[in-house]
Image (cartoon, rainbow, N blue to C red; front, side, top):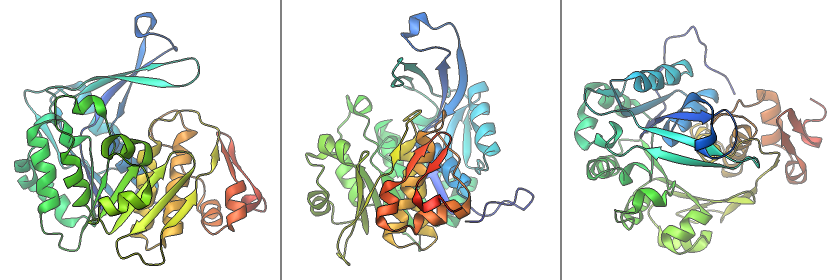
Length: 346
């Protein structure tokens, strides 16, 4: 699994991720926001998390969005660029601000986000943005364009942009769509449009729990019948198992159990899974290895304090990707390392 040569010329992105990222304020202690003494600034957003995780996996990636002409917007683009993500497709809005969210944490480690994104620069994304020269170059050169169900909930113009991407000729590209159900964003909008968007993708990623709320079922077979369009439908059943179902049926559904993980921070795990799965797809892995790489990327995020984790050595990752099923299931991930028979001799 070769990593990027930092001294080499930036390659064309294999994956272009389109969507909003925001400045994040992290409290210095758990508890209600009114009792927090200070906050540390960070950045976050589903699509940029995927771009960063792909870059960490050695897959050239780009993030396409809009930010405000403000300190938070400059911080976003600077930090993503520092993580190896191509930010040449980020448009600076002269009037609208960069979105913001605050994270409220509890003593048990759970967290609750508070969003301040209405009227943000990213909510002004539109189909016209796709014709910007830098954006058009990135999308034309990408092997995969990655979208989520967050973007069409931001505004009518964002919905029109997502539709434009999904309706455009593929020209050999794949479009992936991660449901990323956010009920608060859909309170004043019609979420029924998500059925159309999911069905128009080549790769659709759905959490079983979120699909149950959004579509009335989290069952992989029922979702496959509900969405016949995607070439591959990936259904993530939280900590238990992920199932990939192909449109042609192939050898039937492929299911892979998640690893046991001592969770440090749950934020970003779903985005990391998407990155791992897409990386495996681009590398020509079979479905089982794609799912395993998704699980490993998600586990690396779960044991990290931020939204994006660091994957282990290529030797260790390869050993886990090829491990017998019983060794894979017995592997445990902690903040201090990987424990299990599959990696004991490494």
